[in-house]
Amino acid sequence: MVTTILALVLSSLNRQIFNAALYKNVLTEQNIYARLPEVVGVMLTGSMQSGMPPFLQNLTATNWQAMLTILLPPGDLKAMTDGTLDQLFAYLNGETDTVAVSLNSLKERLAGPGGSDLILQLLDSQPPCTEKELEKMVSELANGNLLFCKPSDLFLPILVPLFTDLFKAVATQVPDVVTIIPSPSPGILSAGEGPFGSDPITTIRTVRLYIRLSPLLPLTFLLLITLFAVRSLKSWLCWWGIPIFASGIITLCLGILAQPILNMAWAIFVVQRIPPFIPTEITGLGQELSRSIVHALSVPIILQAIILLAIGLTAWIGSTFIKPGMENPKRP
Image (cartoon, rainbow, N blue to C red; front, side):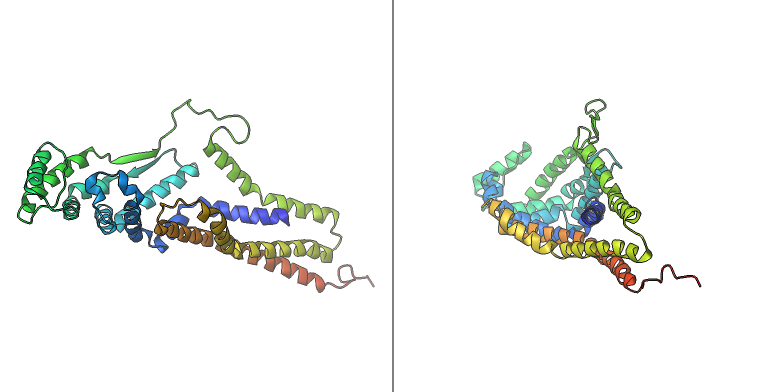
């Protein structure tokens, strides 16, 4: 029973946790791509804002939300995130040896109309310009430096193209791709000794191999029971049916209790360790994502547990219909 429960739970988790589709579906269901600019805007206007340049300290959460949406609209952010998740889990599954993020869409928006919209948002959020500040802004722009204040509508048509040209120059310096996990250089990381090797990826892949083989362990125990304890069809149905049914019941309870256990663990272990400067919007979003992931993980476990207990219950009930003498009827 113990090995059956462990094999069922671990095998299900192994298939789900290392599947990029799980996380992409959760992010889409929670509407993260549309909500993220607002949440990040709230975070940036908190205690993190004190270390920013003065012109960024003038930005409100609404300003940040608008600017982030301009730079990375939900569609572009989703495409970038999906591509990164696909590469990350392909790396963990041994299908590739590197993970990179494409910044092409960000560069295009920065150098295009999105850059102009971003400039207007930045300028509109600043205090009004004095004559000296306006002169200094123009001179600094000519030298490739940024200085922000809110000019009058009369000067906007003059200043925005200057900022746009500067943003285009900045966009050319942004790389097309940022490598998160580079390809390993030959000879730097040895394979190591023992079954787990010397690097985390080797360890993960070895553990996953053992998990995939784990269903063989309860099957081996069932075969040993058959060999040493089973003497008839009735006893075979009992010896197999009862432990399989009990394993299914326990696993079903674990799947159903996954959400309450997560809520309890979050309240006891996570909430107490969240720094006070983290906005409640961030912690709330993290809890929602955790709940969605746990729900997605528990559903297959519950379904498999129901199948398992149905098989065990069928065998157990079937054994009750076998009466003494039915298996080995006397010959006339």
